[in-house]
Amino acid sequence: MNYLTTVLLLIISTALINNMVFHFFVGCCPFIGVSRRVDMAIGMGAAVTFVVTVAAFLSWVFTWFVLAPGAPVTTAIWRWLRPGSSTVPDLSILSYLVYIFVIAWAVQLVEMYIRKFFPALYKAFGVFLPLITTNCVILFVCLEIMKHVGPVPGSVPDPWGLDKALIYAVCAGLGFALAIVIMAGLREELDHCDVPTPLKGPGITLAIAGILALAFLGFTGMDTNLARVLRPTPAAPPPAASAAPSH
Image 1 (cartoon, rainbow, N blue to C red):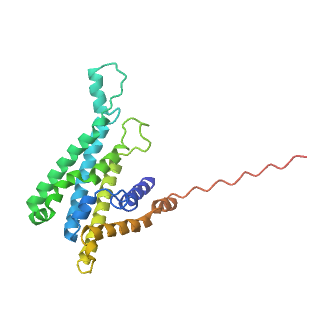
Image 2: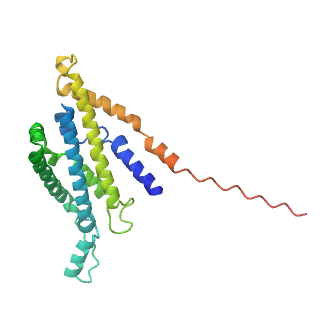
């Protein structure tokens, strides 16, 4: 029950409360550029969710086994090269480089799949599909997972296993998809509205994005209240009766 509660709180916190677009303001380039139609927004949201999930899986594996301080593969190689050494190998300085290569590989996989089976959607995406490589959401998720990965016990305060890392990645992608689909639906309605000329295009889009960010602030504290309901504080034991004074 405690595990399910933790997972539920992680899902709500990642997708709604700490939404990648409206809370951390990452991924704004595709959020503005590919939110003109709902079908394009759904496709972009699905593509980002898939890429961020694959990237999170590979980044967790690389971080746990190779990059983190005391990673088993790196430690085994170091002990073989320098037997008797007490140095703890640490390749975390290479994290950015490894994550970027992982993200680029995942984006190429998605791009080839969409170009093969959905050519119309591929043409609609245009330059924004390969630009998923530089989407801040994906790198942000990988770096956030890196903060919670530590093969050495006690090396990180809140260690995540692969299950939590994948749940976080999927919910981050779904939160991005939710944001871009909401924006696309509003922008489609704006085509039938009389928008002032100075605000047409990115101007009204950014104004609506700010209003949506304020609206998502309404979810603040939802995880705390839900945790209080799902994890009730145990009642304090009644005080022991004092012994009667002897005469």
